[in-house]
Length: 241
Ligand code: OAD
Image (tube, rainbow, N blue to C red):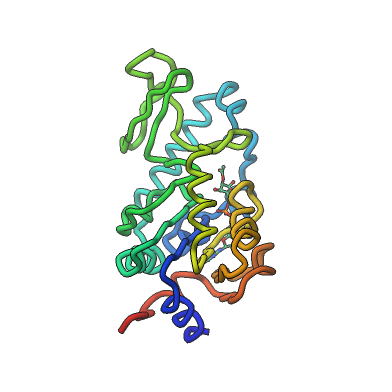
């Protein structure tokens, strides 16, 4: 397993990585689905939609303040660190993460698309104002310095479109890669869930490695499926020594 993983990396000049909540699980950040997933205890439609924010912005901010506090106590794990190490070795490299926790950046990743935004950004619910903000907690109600309307978390909610330029860049990069590594995503939330399929359809030579303790729709098109927690598998993996 490790040998095949290393050999696929060593024979690749251009690598893309897609990550989801599972990569941060061993850092202590709860995933959304699965046994202890957030969506077991909370309803996305109450907390992670534009309608929920319009209905009860205070409740939504309480939930995001709770998550910001939780994440601020977590640190990047071996899987985050492995990805930034890989970036330093591979000249053509792109990480696409669905995670809003910022742990990849803290782990040293630079060539990264945070396709669902960042929990450490705040943006105006009316104008284009967007800014980083690390206050713990954010005092309610946070108001836009430009137009005085209420600020919201800088994340993408259900029912909202992703930035099409980021999506296009992701598709193009994946489709021209030699290898795509998919880590810790349930592979069911669109449009990111389709990226591995689109990549393989456009580029038949694209190899896919998936790391996840549970199989997903992406497992079917993977050339190598590593059925393990990602930090456990990737810790101490010395690929170029
Ligand atoms: P999910 O919570 O849906 O899925 C987490 C995945 O991680 C599952 O497939 C688990 O099997 C796997 N997993 C759990 N522990 C792991 C570990 N230690 N190592 C590797 N994998 C592990 O999270 P996402 O697929 O990221 O969107 O969810 C996608 C989007 O749905 C999120 O970005 C969020 C959510 O609702 C929005 O909020 C818009």
